[in-house]
Length: 159
Image 1 (cartoon, rainbow, N blue to C red):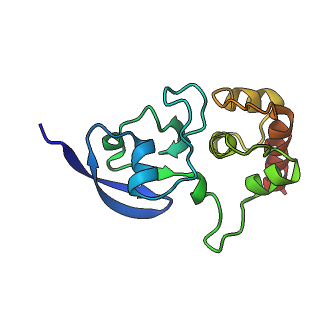
Image 2: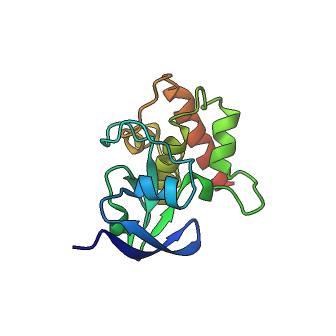
């Protein structure tokens, strides 16, 4: 059995060919091989959601997915939310406006789960937001601000 495999993956809109160790997670490869450190490593067992990225439109705990599984896929990390010129997207702006980031550690995963939710449900209810972000833990207990931010971003997008 080979120790590495070459994968073709689109990360934040950029096609990449990466030689990855077969046992490395997507989280490992994003942080160490691709240099995108916005995706946070925390529990490494899929409990906290800090490592959430979007793979082919679905929020995924990148600590639980082997990198070889994204061969041929499209991956979006928190770095991929902002515009090419660095302007924040409406969701990121709403997080700042509503005071959602406290310590900030969970925020990349929260943003990615929220973006995946808004991509599927552009007009979410409070219950939709709670369900969509249920896999993301916030140790600072900023859930009210996070929920308010997601709802505010949805409102901006509707205008």
